[in-house]
Image (cartoon, rainbow, N blue to C red):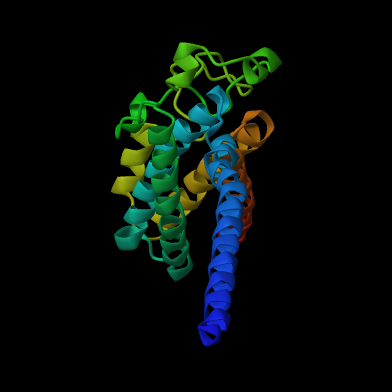
Length: 237
């Protein structure tokens, strides 16, 4: 009988250690549990936006769609290889941006712009007052209704986004070919890009959504570079 006492003691010791370990693990789990609830809270600010963000996204979609349409014409009508290369670059850059802007509008519960460029409204530079930027959004702002106020460059509430070509100008571009097309394309796309730069600048100044403002910064930089490239091509002609 004496020979079994060490085994009983050892078994009791092992059981006590196991119980203590289980208790420590449980406490660790309880202490660690609250950290998992911080995820949604940290992600929430990325959805914050204001009227300027919605106006920027909606108008830039319409603006980019027209640029892509113009760039597609260059594939069959341009004679200058550099113009064709630039037009392809424009398409490759702006199509993904259209998709990203569309995603944001959907997330914000805003109305997506019509595929008809003539229905775009208002201009790309919304006059957002400090009150509108900082106050709690109204129901219409939450739904993404663009501000009907006039823009800094004088377009009213029913104007197309800044720098957009008219239907007559687009038809003129469609009817052109060769060197005439190259000249018209560069002239129109420079003006188109200048409008996009103004819209992007307004978003950086007035927007709230950080990712949208970062996209606006990239658009401003890339399109200013392309304007310089197109100006150089015009000089070469």
